[in-house]
Amino acid sequence: MTLSSPRPSTEPCPHCHISGPGGSKIRDDVLIHCLKNCKDTCVGCQKLLDIERKIHEARRTLDELLKEKEALASTLNEHHDPLSHQLPVEITSQIFLHCLQLSPEDLITRRCYMEKYLIKSVLLPGKVSKHWRNIAKRTPSMWSIICVTLNQNNYISSGEVVRQWLELSADSPLFIQLDVDPTMPVTDEVVGSILEKVIQQSHRWKLLDLDVPNDLLPWISNAMLSRYPDCLEHIKLGVMYPQSDLTAEGVLNLHASPRRLTQGNVRLRQIAMNMDHLTHFYSTYLVEMDDCITLFQVAPRLTFCDFLGAVIGSPSSNVVVNSASLQTLKVSSFMGMSWRSRSSL
Picture 1 (cartoon, rainbow, N blue to C red):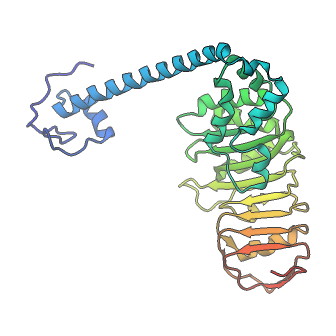
Picture 2 (tube, rainbow, N blue to C red):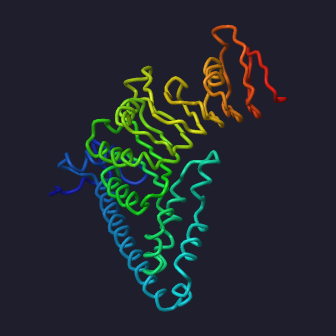
Picture 3 (cartoon, one colour):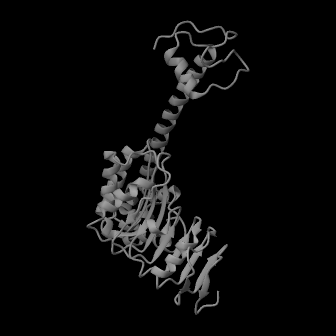
């Protein structure tokens, strides 16, 4: 890009309105417009462009140095730490599993979500040495937690990551967290390919944690028509609504009968599955009274119910609910309901 002589520092730029030192901050979009479309670029814009280039080069140099340091440390550890070679592979694998921030089983019983720090703890042993890296790759349980976040910046590279982790997990039960940005088009081929890879392994799902656009639920339901995730124990579901569709409710339809359900900002009627074996229910969002009544009616084995958000509204009809199995009920506000239980609540 050829630029003409910069404007004097005292002369205002017609696009970014900078007039020398002390001017207002240049917005990125305005800067880009000024640099690409202006023949006369002001001194402030030109200096900022030069600084951005230097920052980009410094970051690239830092990334290269960190990779070089990691490779050198791995090589040195091969020779300076003989103990790592003396431990039996089985014991080393167990040590790796105990070093995880959370074990896979913790994700079933706790109301927690799989954060990136947990994924980093999976990769950590492989950075120590090539020997440990090979053992980690032969420990399928380490790769059974698959956390996928799809947005406009990373969705292309995420497909290869999902493929590798599914392959390394072998036949281990899977703990899936899928977070899809609402701006991602449902019809995108890359997004569809990633979802298909995950759905193909639905027979191994033990936990399914979805935070997806509302209009993606019918797509997932259709893809699951002939699949039976019999091992699924816990479903966590939250949806995001595109600005163009704030009222239509998608439905997640699964041939599953989990023991635990965590309900986010969805209605109970948006979750179509067998609740005969449901024993634990958690709600992290506001719940309407009619949904509470429906839950107690369709989940005869429910023993634990925690409404973390308030229960709102009144029942649409006079209903007496008998829930003989319920032992624990936690709720911030519960009004308008007749209650009988063998437990003292």
